Every structure is written in structure tokens, then in C-alpha cells.
Image (cartoon, rainbow, N blue to C red; front, side, top):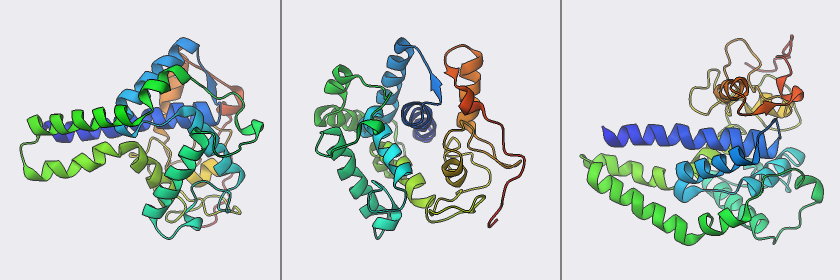
Length: 256
């Protein structure tokens, strides 16, 4: 039972930081926060993502490139460029590290206003840190896995962040329904997103990348947006006016 609780908690906490901090804060700048809180979020990302920790700075660049070149050869993680989800994950991994290490030339406009903490990532974004996290996970499973099948969750734990990114980047360009006709393959994975913190509404997001709320129809609910609104009310962050745009009055449905 401990393992199941851990896996569920790990999924939702790590995805929260990737959705709110990496995606909506770093890549899209939908809200502002103090430098102190920004560092707290860095720590939150490292603790929850563990062995699959990724740089918010590099993620921000990659996601901006994804929006600028969706489904083209210049898209760093498009299913249109790969045969299956595994080759897409490997391509994404290579593109990510090429950007992180400075091997890929990136225009300045994609680097603007991104969070950066080089000192922190000197110690957290390396092979040794990932190895220590994997060792910690194995130790945890050794003490708390009471059935053999619980060990099947260990690979999921190790690659949690990568799996979450691949789930949205692959599925949301392959399967789902469409609210807005676009010149790309973006789709909404599920009508009620209780798994991905609102990231499942990918078609909505590509139509309105400047809106903090990815939900557009009455039955859609964006957990990430709800969390941001709460933090805004608590004065932890300050949402920008563009991120508070209302839900469109009319949604041009292409295929439901």
C-alpha cells in the first residue's frame, strides 16, 4: 500500500512542478514570482522529479521551439518526426541535452526571461545526482514493496518526468478530440483531465498559448490553472492579465 501511495503522490507532485513551473512559468511566463520562491520551486522540481530532473531553462527553450515549429522538422519533440513514442523520447532527450550543453544554436528570442540557476544545476543536473536518486528509489522499494508486482513501478519512478512529457507530447498529437481547427496535429487527450494537471488540453493550449487556463468547454477542468489561481490569491505569485483571459464565448468545434 505504501508503494501505491508513493507512486500516486510522486506522479501528481512531479507533474505539478513540470506543469506550473516549467511549462506555464518558464516557457510561457504566465505569472511572476519572487526570486526566493523561484528557488523554492527549483528545489521542488528536483525533489519530486528526482532522477528525471530537467532544467526549467532548457525546458522553456524547447517548448517555445515546439510552439514556433509545431510538427515540422525543427520541432524538438513531434510525433510527426518519429516512428513511435520510444524514438520520440530518444530524439527529445538528444535535443534537450544539445540545447542544455549549448551544442544547438538558439535565437535570443527563445531565451528571453527564462529562469536560470546555474549553481544549483551544477550539483543537481548530472549523472551522479541521477544515480543517487535511483539508488534511493531502489532502497525505498526494498523496504516497502510487499509484493513482487510492486517492483514493476520502479522503472516508472525512475523515468517519471520523461514519461509525463512523452505522454502529453505523443498522445496529444496522436489521439483525442479537437476543439479548434489548426495547422498542426494538437489534440485534447481526454474531456475531463484528472491525470495531467490540465496539460491534456493540448489543442486548446496551442490555440491560446497565452491563457493560463487550458480548459475552454464547460466540462473541461484545468487543475494547474486552479492551483495557480489559489497561489495568486495567497500572494505567492502574480498572474499576468494575459493569463487571465476569459474562456471563449464560442468554441469552434471541429471534431468531438
